[in-house]
Image 1: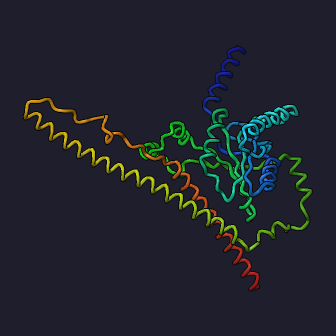
Image 2 (image 1 turned 90 degrees about the vertical axis):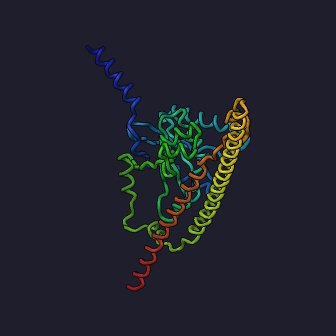
Image 3 (image 1 turned 90 degrees about the horizontal axis):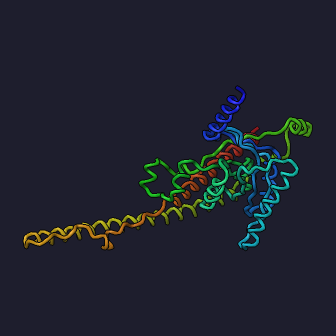
Length: 338
């Protein structure tokens, strides 16, 4: 009886492992968030990355610790040293009984410009070894505007299927009903601290209800941040225009090829009618060796999707900062009137 119960429990565990619940939330320790912020701000505006460690528990991905990666170099020996450094760090963490399971990585960004092919390739490399992983994106420049610019991202399942097949043609995208907003999925972040740390933070709270950081939020100067966002937005629009020119060039060539095929077929049919009248065998109406019947490769729409995503991100940032600026101006006007 006990053996049957154990076997049934094992089979249930295997079934649960195969049908994993979808990821609902990323629960991060406060100390891990502080480490990420410290590392990204120390090297800003240079971009840095690091490893996320934690546990995958049901629909919650727990991030309990992290450590930074060395600055990347082009030299192969230095890249090999970086891989050895990661393995050595995880071994040391395991020896001191700290969570050393990789659950993803974090990276800094400049004004939200993170939606690149390199990020997707990194995701796919992680997915080969880890069932579920996330990327924590931290933006030091946007955090200086009074918000914690921290988000957790993962690739959507439908996009990963298309990326593995490397087929981003218009037909496949319509078949999968995949639009540019379906590449990344943002997972909510929940900050978690132990009861001891929460009690210690309560002791550290000042008696005054207003701290200096609260006054910093009333800074009315948002011009540099807005200027950089608009500059990046203009660059993205130029890149998007170049991508559209590629598709226009492809469709012009496609129409030219179809016209050449129709003219060739009309000529061949006229020739076959003359051969039939002369009692000769007709020629085939398709000639695979003819270059006009060679299909033209359709350009990938991945770059245009990523650029469109990036444009939307810049527009949202400009909209958010402009709204905050108007709120501050109205607040200052009300204070002056009083």
